[in-house]
Image (cartoon, rainbow, N blue to C red; front, side, top):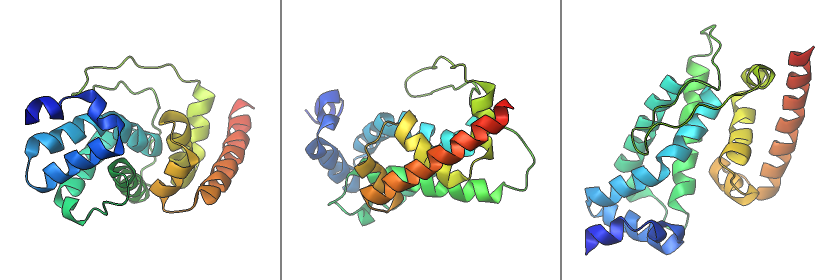
Length: 190
């Protein structure tokens, strides 16, 4: 009964289902945590890659994010959504890694081939080189808010919760990130 309920995809479409899995994982149910991992791996990877602009680094950080989440699951505030908490860990950890590796003079592309061990390989997308260049010129906080909004399609409320600010502040950050992206993009075109 437990396994069939864990694997029901409709279960995670509700906050109650997500909460049920978190409660089971806190009690030591590894299958429940594996279900959370499989459910949120792709979005967590997209967040990390959007900030780091490198698939290999993003894969490493995603593993760290899930290890941190597993280790600190008992401290998770049940009033929040698990996904928001997890994405906040992903954003913070990615920004930390980006700052650590800033001294590296490497350029990464957004079209690195992605091998997804959970859901199978994804088709690499073709991204305009000017977009890649513009994204690489942005501060990691700007890349984070743009990634959360455009790639992960989170609402401003969820972005605010993920970044630890109000939805109005998230809206302002998104507006400013768009402006800086536009300037970087136009610079890349000329």
